[in-house]
Amino acid sequence: MNEEKKIKVLIIEDDSYISDMYRIKFESNNFETVIASDGIEGIKLLGNDVPNVILLDIVMPKIDGFSVLKTIKKNPQLKEIPVILLTNLSQKENIERGFELGAIDYIIKAHFTPSEVVEKIKEVIEREKRNKN
View 1: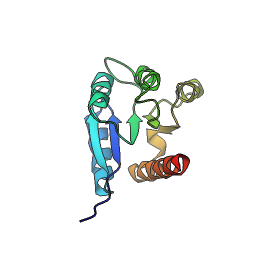
View 2: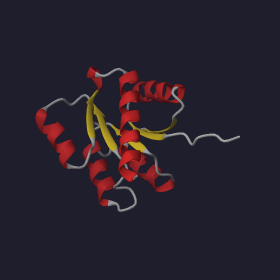
View 3: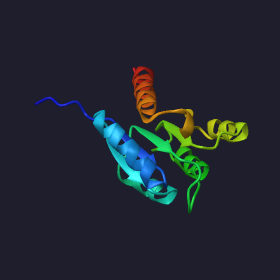
């Protein structure tokens, strides 16, 4: 049986309700999901298995999403992974900082449904495939 490899999404989000909601939505769209409940756990998970894309919250305990993003982009094995910030911080300076640190997109949770986030991830993956060819 020739089964296409699933797209793996790492969701780094401290709110279990939100991460579960996105996990269910992604898995119902044939994605593989891995959940980290804080930034430290997210960084540890990246040492085991590299996802196709990362959804990263900013406001989290232990280490914030900006610090996680910096860590990812400094690592030669991880820096090419597309990171999308998924947050409720909508201030212009936060958005600018996210892009400056290397995020490829910035999604404000209140402005997007989970279905729209899934579609955005599909677009990112397709763009990444085109850029590699």
